[in-house]
Amino acid sequence: MSKFVTNNTELFANIAQDLQFTGYSIQTLDQELPALQALKSRLAEFDFNTFDEAGIGRKDDHQKNETIRSDKIHWLDNSNALEGCFLDYMDELKAYMNKRLFMGLFSYECHFAHYQPGAFYKKHLDAFKGQTNRLLSTVLYLNPDWQAENGGELVIYDGEDHDKELTRVSPHFGTLVTFLSDEFPHEVLPAKAERFSIAGWFRVNNSVNGQIDPPR
Ligand SMILES: O=C(O)CCC(=O)C(=O)O
Ligand SMILES: [Fe+2]
Image (cartoon, rainbow, N blue to C red; front, side, top):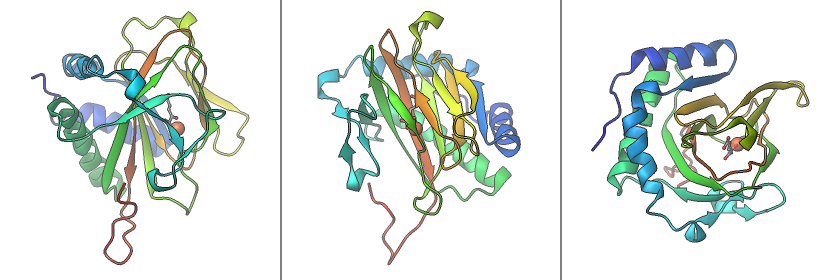
C-alpha cells in the first residue's frame, strides 16, 4: 500500500509558518501523490447515492439544510486501511503543530465530500468563537485534471471584513488548505464537474465530566 511520506518537516514547517503569519495556508502535497492516488481509489468503492447528505452543525445536532450546502459526505475511519493511512498522516501534522505552535490539538475527524455539478456550500464559518472545539480546518482536494472553467473554487474571506475576498483556491489534486476554523468565512462555488475532497477538523479536548466533547 502506498504510504504517506513520514516526518515531512518541510511541508509541516511551511503550514505552521503560514498559520502563524496569516492564519491560513495553501500547499501542494507533491510528495504524497502516490499515496493520494491510492486514497482516491477508495472513492471508486462508494456508491455516492449512499453518501450521507451533509448537515450543518455538529454531528449530534446535525441539521440538513440544502439551501446552505448540497454536498454528500462519508466520514473516514481507521477500520479501512487507506483511510487509516490518511488519518495517521494527519496525526503527524497534529503532533507537529502542537510542538511548533502549542496549539493543543487533541483529535482529528474528516469526511470525504462529493459535490455533484451545481453543488455548493455557501459562506460559513466552521466554528464560532467560544462555542466549539474545532480549531483548525483542513481541506484536501482529489480532482485530477481540474480545469479552471470547472469553477468549484474555495473562496476564503477576511476574518474582519467578511465581504473582502482574501483568496480563491481551485480544487486541484493534492492541494491542501489549512485555516483557523473560527477566523475565516469561506464558501464553495458551484462547479461544472464532480468535485471530490476530504474536509477535516482538528479539535481541542473540551472534556466535561470525563466525557470527550463531542464524542461524534
Ligand atoms: O470543499 C471545500 O473547499 C470546503 C468545504 C467546507 O468548507 C466544509 O466542509 O466545511
Ligand atoms: Fe467549511
